[in-house]
Image (tube, rainbow, N blue to C red; front, side, top):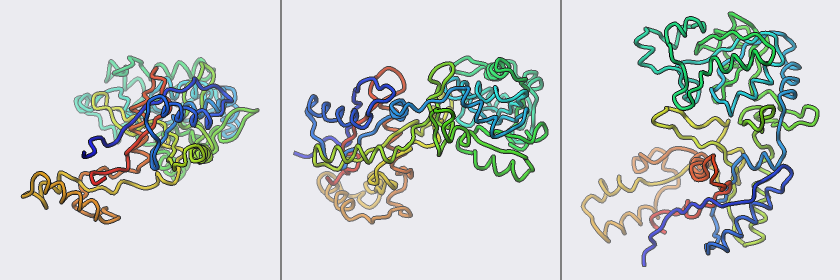
Length: 396
């Protein structure tokens, strides 16, 4: 009988992970126990993925607002800062802001509009058009912005982030002044010391600020890159990818992930004889069609993966073959023709019309998105995802 199932994705339940736990062994044990309990066998080229959250928790990779404030103060050595392009998130940025603001007497908070970098909106483009505002050149004060737009609360959370972030700054002991602009150099009218908080555009922002004469420029990826009085840290991403842990601490993005995934792969090899690919995943890279929110608030989808997950898909578009080269075939004859095409396809289809419409993204970004949607961010209790058949195709 022909094979009738392709890719299978399983969310695996695991123990609640605490600081100091051996996440490598927990992952291996969870996979082996799930395999025995559910009756599925492990195979070469299967994939096991672990959410970054439990990895960082096991690593005790936390930082307090005091540690953040200390690091920021040491880097800037000034009382005034321009804080530009933070994303609008209570989970992602509010606790970081508490620590940052503690280091200064005055914070100029410059927000991008009509939305932040990942799509959280104050207003929509239709409202901008009606007000005859050009977001690519118009710089607005908070007073000017509120005069034009009465309701600036978030579509899903209902939070007025202008007021919310301003309140956090004031409660941390600093004066707050809000500006709205999409040009990073607009902040230099107010201060030449800038902390740029954008994620995926941070290198451009830094480059433009330095070229325009900023005296000091750092990004969130430059904060908490080493331990402060025994705190956690991330040498590559700093505060990027952090999440709220408590009202006074953040959980940082996990570190040393390549070492971890290779260790898990080796342990699974010893236990099963199979070469199973392993990755750590964070936010998936997808966009919500209603709220227009692009989900990727982490600096990367995967901070660590085994070598077998390098690269991008090299796939033929089956419906293109069926509608073009083999338009006159049906049934078993069509199946055999497509199977033969797959078996004889070139190793690089990048410029081939036969691959048009396939997803030109890295494997880790695709698989990480699949895992994020599987595990969710709530109470499913499946921080480990096991995938089978991902690298199979219609010919096998």
